[in-house]
Image 1: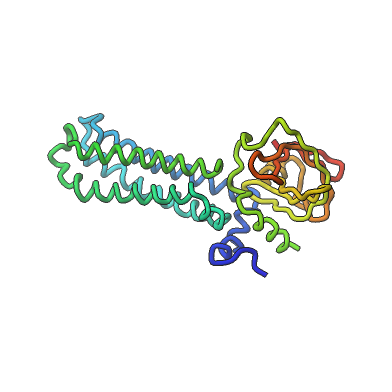
Image 2: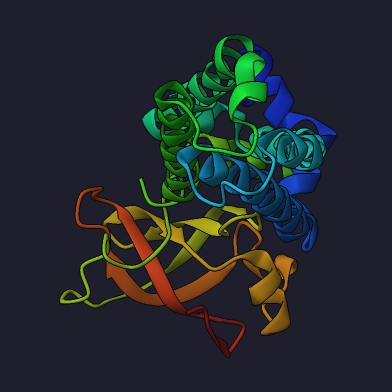
Length: 161
Length: 113
């Protein structure tokens, strides 16, 4: 007798999935870790994006990036495992949720946006390290902020749709 | 039995994720149902029971288990076979689903909101 078919059903029915649903304080605790991670991710990205939009031009963009980006990367150590744990609890429902699919696509888009920015624009940042950023940098920064805000919105809306 | 309860829980797709806020429930139609629990989930993010009431079996959305436990509604009280009374509101779009504001079981009334 299987509860729900496929690997996602198995994931949901696993001890880990059950623990997430049934242990009284595990799910809320995991949510807290996820949110702390999101705070670190968005906060670190936002201060750099604001610099890339042209604010605080006296601050070296390269030094700022060197300071915040390791924290951005580190935030995924909180976000990804906690996200996977919550996914495990209701895997079959998450994959059927449009909001969840949109959220994942937005994360992918934000990642591509960041990769392109570093490959194309940030390489030449020596020229504007303590001055006004070029239009391309502003465009990538604006896209980054909007994409991450949309990701957060989708994450929150998962509970409402 | 535990497995059966879980199947009951999983057989109700869409019951778990989308239950924040109250706007999807019609507060102009107060319901009070008494019946027998046929399946239950004492689960995050919201507990739930399948309630066999006269004429209809309802999916009843409860509160997070951590809240229910703090208010004295323990897991064992929602076992299949238990007789409970729930007061709450029906879902506007999903017939047969309601959210309980209050549940009475074993002579004890527990606020879920």
